[in-house]
Each structure stands twice: as C-alpha cells, then as structure tokens.
Length: 175
Image 1 (cartoon, rainbow, N blue to C red):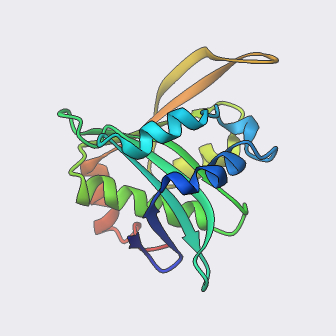
Image 2: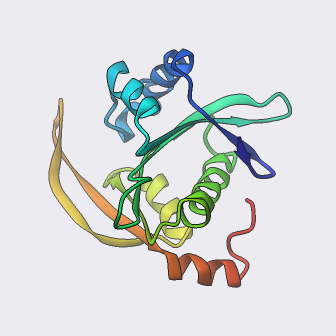
Image 3: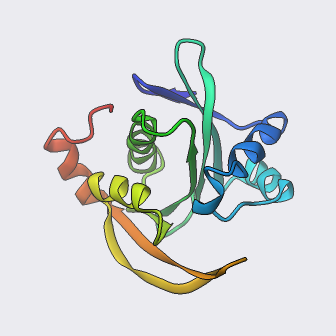
C-alpha cells in the first residue's frame, strides 16, 4: 500500500469491482469519463502493465475512488493516467491523489513522461492538471462518441525533468 497524509492507494481486488463500477457510473462522474465494463476492469487488475488502485481516505480508510495507470512496463517510460475517479468532490482528495500518482510514476516506476487525456468540457479536472504542472500537448478532435454526438479530448503530460523541478521548488509536497 502506498500513501501520503491524505490518502492511501491499495491494489484493486476482483471483489472491489462492484464498487469501482458503481463509482464510475455515478451520474456525477459519468459525463467526465468513458466507463469500462467489468471485463475491462478485471483485465486491468490482472495485467502487469496496468496498476489499478482503490483510493482510500479518512481515519477509517474508506474507499473514495479508484485510479488506473497504463504503460507501467512501457519501454519508452511513458505512463498514462487512464482513469482517476474520486468522490466526494471539492475536498482536495483529487489533488492529493494526483501528487501521489506523480510520485509513483516518476520515482517508483521510472517514468520519463506521465500523460493523460481529459474531456474538453471537464474544466474542473483540466484546472487541476494545469495547476499540477501538466502541459497541454494537443487535442483529439471529436474522438469519443457519446449519445449526444462526439466529444474532444485534451492530451496533457508532465516530463520527469519538469516533475524534478517542481520537487526542487517544493511544489510536490503532499496536498
């Protein structure tokens, strides 16, 4: 288990997938993500290139969300933050989780590049990523099909040297 002052990450178990799917399909979260079915989550739990974690917080370490990293064995050392879903919102848990994930990606997994994509309309998440040093690389125009049409994604990344500079400046302290 990995943690900081606010949260702890523990590997997701198959028994946790009911919770994962319930959080992922919650009406507050659904517009911001493209949900997976149970089989996709099962594969991510089992496949060594993925890291699938339950996010826990509070004195009782209650589940507050989940995260998925992809490319953990990528020879190019480019790791993707595939999914981060945190509930409840507005308590700084997402920021604490993102800082911990950056530490894992760069310090534990040896990433050169840590990247993600975010839906254009998800301004709350985009502001978090901007504030945490991620740089916009471009947009994938109308690449996600929804019931209402198509949505675009913003691709963002943080490089190891940028992360190191943030650490030196004291910007990566536990949130």
